[in-house]
Image (tube, rainbow, N blue to C red; front, side, top):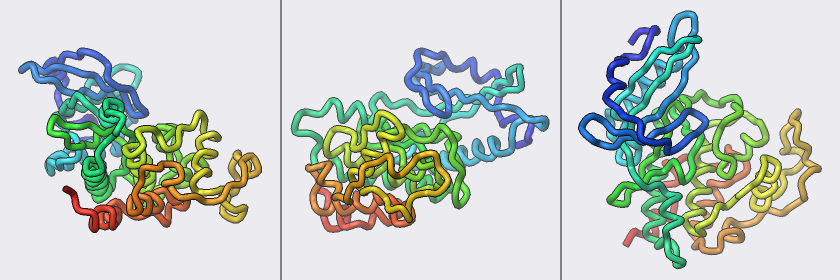
Length: 307
């Protein structure tokens, strides 16, 4: 694959008819589309700024990595069917990522539940599938950075698949903050506090999502970045002066002094083991959070077998 363009054909885009917009995010617009056989697909449109040498090597590497990931056909990651591109004027390339389309996402599923909510067995199984998919992405050096119920698709068989990870970010040990990372309610505190971060931002987001499956409502529904931090501190407690990041616009004194609490103080439906798991996943200090693989060995999954 050369640096001038992705290995694709402009003419292939004529194989797809855009039907309607089904989502917008930090990394592009997603359309519901139909291919020439009548099959419904999800078409993600991403604009890439060209350099003097053509397509940036970082973009080529990430497209290549997505294709390699797709060869694994992981059951908890959405299938990438094709990559197409169209060169535009004004130094931009439009990359189209064609994914399988699933009608329902986890947010839809939660909203559709009866008052009794999701069964403990279903929560446990979907949590396993979420963490298994996250572990797969992290093992290939991809951090999703925007995990939320709307990006977790549910198949007709009821299985979870992670979506919208295309061109998310291949990561180094610690990444610099970007202005568009993770929907506010699922955003890790180190991102809100403008600190370097790594793949463990996805563990924080996954913890928020698991809690939401139990309670049917967002754990930290902040209205702004400051309010989001304040809601997080309801659980983690206000960090000490020593642990407060230096040289950031936010002042520690702007927040109420709170003690650390347990996740089940905010999400009463949690059992003892799920409370302990979320206590670890939602640790304010990302260095203390377990990896996705470590989460999967927790007693919540190991000592409480699926029925």
